[in-house]
Length: 226
Image (cartoon, rainbow, N blue to C red; front, side):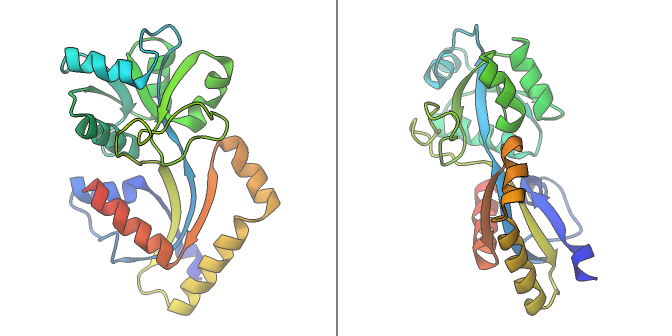
């Protein structure tokens, strides 16, 4: 049963190989099937925060190197990578406040216990809609459809594009005929109305880049992470 060996992977699939010794090589020991969905990350502050824009936050960090902290799911996560890339792009010393998940990072912002948080928009959505947080930027390549006024980091001048992504892989020795069939099945599933209806409330956006396209994405993502 080949399907029982399929594996769902995410950012940590690649990141872990750069921070610890693994018993496998992500890019060579698995066959990429399909880049299924992604979910935006956002940088947020409490609604009462003096930081009304990302520029405000960056400027405060410049004036107080290491004195402005951002809470995020860390270490070795997509959110952590996004924060480190932002620090590098902005050439600024922002302190990392690590949390054991995206929800705890969000809680830090909601409780005004941290100057800002970098977290998943899926966790944040109800609070953004309620107006209890201020969304400063998204770390992905595109603006979030329901937050059209929130800029991307690239639009703000920082060459950073990191989202929470999820894809499917198979064992590396899986026959090409089988991987092709599986890739096609996953791509088709992402077009089904009932599947799309279940993804939308979770703030998961279908991608559907399969086979060689997903392989190219993984190589690019791995290079960025390293």
